Amino acid sequence: MADPVTDPAATPRRPLELLIAAPRGFCAGVDRAIRIVELAIEKHGAPVYVRHEIVHNKFVVDSLKAKGAVFVEELTEVPDGAPVVFSAHGVPKSVPAEAQYRGLDYLDATCPLVSKVHRQAERLVESGRHILFIGHAGHPEVIGTFGQVPAGAMSLVETVEDVDALVVPDPQNLSFLTQTTLSVDDTAAIVAAIHRRFPAVQAPRGEDICYATSNRQAAVKAIADACDAVLVIGAPNSSNSVRLVEVAERQGIRAALIQRAADLDWAFLDGVGTLGITAGASAPELLVRELVDRLATRFDVTEREEETTRETIAFKLPRGLDAAA
Ligand code: 10G
Ligand code: SF4
Image (tube, rainbow, N blue to C red; front, side):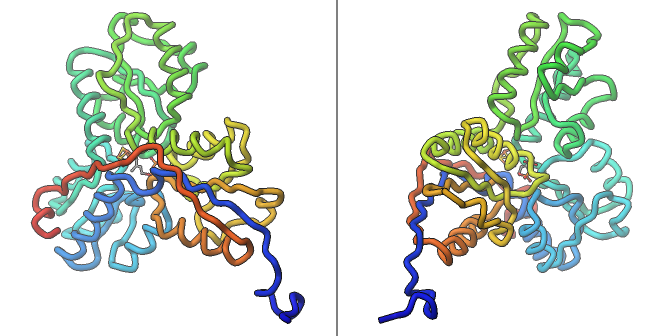
């Protein structure tokens, strides 16, 4: 008979049920942005410069580096004549303007849903409205959207308290827009506070929080109650991934953000019979599989996926690259 002391395979392992949220992981904007970098490398050859992490995921960035991408934060770091891609989060207008001025061959991987908010911001300011922008200070998407309009045309709102403190040019002539990757619940509370304080405010025609952000939050909400703990795969600078941790925590469930399976502290699983797993919009499915495989080295795992909605959306590539796809 196998000896459980000398033969680990003979040791009975504790069962662990994995409840995997769907949708999770890559959204259409991330898929498109990564493809743009890959196709740019195919078209121009390496190196292709990328301004800012194409999406907020180290694994994705490292994989593209291995194919010939060079990541920089500013255009000043891009040599003359080199091709450059702008990240999915969007850029201020000054960035393509500078690229054009320098004669750089640039590709814009801004998600079409972010570009839509950019155009709305421009239109609102052209029609004379002041914009309240709900978002997180310092995030590249916020910097990019503020950079679509003249300085002073938009005020940043991060919290309900910020709404109370706002000083606006004309309360009768206000609109609001939002970052695409916010907490659905927090944003609803901020929007309600805006309506209370400025009853004449004009709301956007459609929701600015994108389908991927809201679907991933709804999916983690749907599994949280059945879980003893939730792990979210994503980067600490990934706004949408951090929001998924918050969603689980607000349901009273212990939750943690990890970038890779190797980051998992086994103590996190003490007393956990059902573990929820999800991944932010910039985290590849491969990293979910890596986590499941690592868990299977210690536990007798069973997997169940709970799908709250099916996503079918895909975005076209920019002109010039679509032929190469
Ligand atoms: O969630 P954020 O905005 O931090 O970005 P990400 O790269 O982690 O995920 C994809 C989302 C975007 C490109 C912003 S629209
Ligand atoms: Fe586009 Fe939404 Fe993905 Fe951002 S999170 S890239 S807005 S689909």
